[in-house]
Length: 104
Image (cartoon, rainbow, N blue to C red; front, side, top):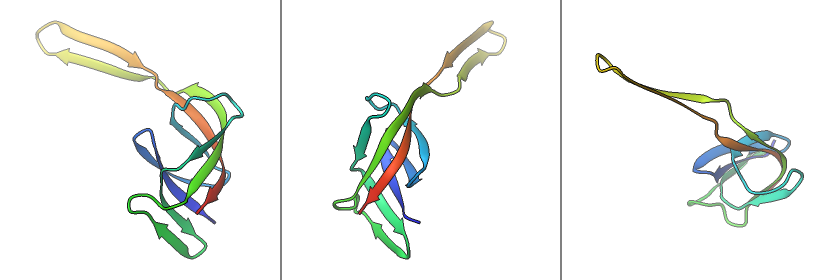
């Protein structure tokens, strides 16, 4: 089974064909095709291509399945005996991406 390691949104993801991954928000409508050129590694089927830092002529294509938001993260600050406390919530925007193909 062929897989790749891609870089997007300052993070790295290991993806295979058919996977649905949640990544940092990308601009685009649902159903739109996205091509990513930041491919760091391609492996599977007994062979591996390691980039330095990117694999030449490699790309991963995917289809936007959904534009959504992650679960809420609570940020809570407190200082003892000072009557100080702050609470804040945050929900990160995400894109659900279905991996269609890996080319190396």
